[in-house]
Length: 550
Image (cartoon, rainbow, N blue to C red; front, side, top):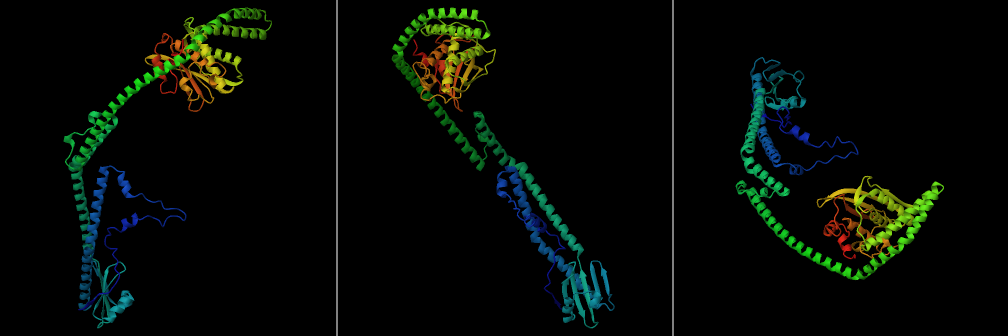
């Protein structure tokens, strides 16, 4: 009996799909985006792998390889298995149709197992008209098609009986076998993957990859932290592959770097010694030059200061007695306050006369416990009498219990000079802030008293010689250029250091560093320490100005 196959579009949904659902799920859902809403681009997978650790990369890579291999095997086996199942179902349809044709009294419609069959008219069997026409056009031949459910369908026209015969079969056992075959294949692939992954992770990668990488990372961490005994990798820890070559190259680079560092350190040490020697010699030369230029003027000034102080003592004594009588005879509080103020001014003039004698080295300073906050307040009162400070505000944040050992009158003179200079620099308008803090330097306890203003700051060209005698700038333009030189000498005689610098936000900062009670130094000692403290701050060391004094 002849057969003729028809070109009928097949539906393969009855067999398991390997990749259809996964492929559709992995596509971006761009169609679901709302109008005007941009679809966010996904990062490149290569960049994701670049940010992962090696273990995770290897797991992802050989897992992806196993999945791709499984998909390839399933795609390769699926057409062959599907063809086998379809042939088996078609053969069942043909056998059933032959049995119906040979049966003397075939049933009109029935089913046996997975095979459905029937004999009758077109309307009774509900066959598609196109299939029925093709079968009627070829009596006795079999026309193949598919049912709505996708089963193979065989239709034949029996011209002798005048009826249609059909048979539809579905090989459930074969299809179940295909599913089991797919399951066994997946299980075999998973087992092989687990075996390979376990072998790699337990025996191969820890020794050949992870261990050398961890050793190299540990050596790099030691290199960063300065642990030189652990920054090189031992030869026994280096494999003979590419990682070992990288380790050997790294050890050579680190060793060469250390040799170069040592050579550089030796060269810098030699340069520093030479620079220190040159600096010391230049300092000595500059000091000698200043001494020669100012020696005559300083000698004359010392003699004039001593004579002026001597001549001032008598009239000041008379004026002091008159003021004291005025204070005793004052009838109201205002008169008494004015008399007391005049008396303080006279006493201040007497102390200034004594300071002139001090400048001429007539007598040593006293050593008493001095209240620093009171000294600053007293100095500010004197500055207000001498300068127009209506728009200048003093912000005194010195602690009330801050005391040093020294001469109160001389320290008052220091702060008078500093506050007056600050007021002059601000042109009579601004804020002067005085503060203090304790510090440990060179094993001694110091108190640092700062006087900061909001003026234009100090000319950088003047800073190196700011405390030299006869240096007259805007900071001291109403005097003879001796105010800061005298202040520096008084601070130095108290065993301290005076520094000057410009603030980053504007203005000048003067810092008076004095040792706390019991920590003072004799006159002239430790000048080098003061210079070292001032170094790097654009300040003047006390030793420079002291070299030009008499």
